[in-house]
Length: 235
Length: 318
Image (cartoon, rainbow over all chains, first blue to last red; front, top):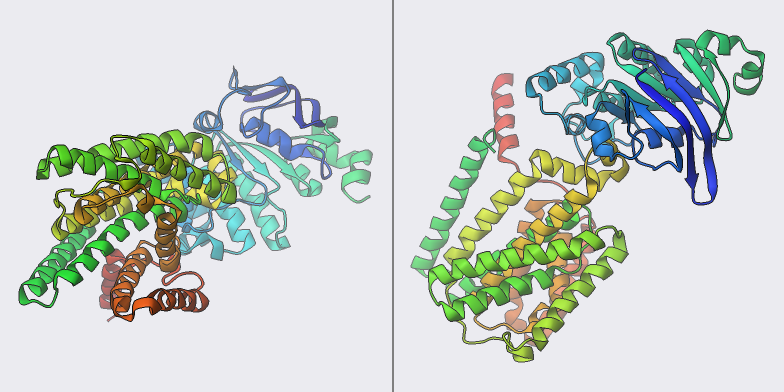
């Protein structure tokens, strides 16, 4: 098991956003957390990457507890996050954004090769290498955010709503890329409001509702589930 | 730095040519004593403003306490050169001032850089006031009267060399891996944190670096003007450095140079207008801000590298 979350609770002040959530991610899988706004999906992701501290519970990564580690250490240990709303660095060029992703890496030779891999996967980034990242379109910025996360050479990549606010043509492309990332051997934890798309490519999924997991199963089983269809897939 | 060796060499060449040019102009008599003083003040302002630009423009932290660090450098250099009126004393004074300013910036920076925007501005302003009040009340600094009759050790050559050195260091820092980290903190703190960047560390690093360059500026001020008093380093001094940064363009070193030169020359030309001087000076500031609200250069930088690449590309196209 690459990642195991045990009985995780997170508070924002007095509000309990996550109430005793447990789930796990095996190496090589795509696992998705789906649920409505405010279900606690992003909070869980931020807790895993060390931006928020949990109130209680454990996060085990590769056999060690990480819920008390600093985010620098978590990134260095191989977890990399693509934040919701992309959060690219607007004043920096596309290349500089990618260089920021590789910030903690020391293996220069492999890093150089990885730039090539990222440029092959996202040709549009190669074309706009020296352009200010702020001038990219929304879909291109999402690709940049994903490329930047991949430059950290992660074992586990956390994707927070990658399809949010994108044109349908880009959404399909993004989901194709997520599958390609998995094929390359990187494990994916995906958070999505677009439940149909997410479950279609996921090995397993968990359904969150107001801070609790209410359902879990393989992607296919959840897609076929009547309750899930009713609540998240529009009938 | 190694990769940019070629461009650094070109810059060095430009710097040497500039130095020779000014020397020749002085020999011919075009630059008189008055103009030389203006040149020195411009140089000191460039050092001060490029340090502040690093803090405000590149790390995105709004500081109003630059004069405080300048004061530390000025007093350190003044006290050391009084005891030791030689070139070595000047070098020692500058170094001690830089260390002092660096340590104080570290002490101030760690708690205050958690604040943002106007809160940080007020906190840094307060810190600079504390430094000023301490200088007024210490015996060794001769209280509110300040120190005078200091040996004039800094010549315009000293200032020129130090402008070049601090600029090369600052620009190379900005273009380094750590410089990119500083800018990423400015653009998006959450994203920077999730890239594994210790955001507090880099904010403090930029603040300390900026404080240390301010100390250089202060030391030169003390050993060229030969008189310093605590009131030279009040809030108005911080603001006049800030004006240079804002006018040149926040985040543009080229702009800082241009604004420092423009304001310095303007100040010199307006000397003959007497009482009208400050009115005309303020009017010029207002006009610049109306027509160039992002500063003279915005975030644009003059780059030898780009110039080279453009030439190369033009050749390939032919």
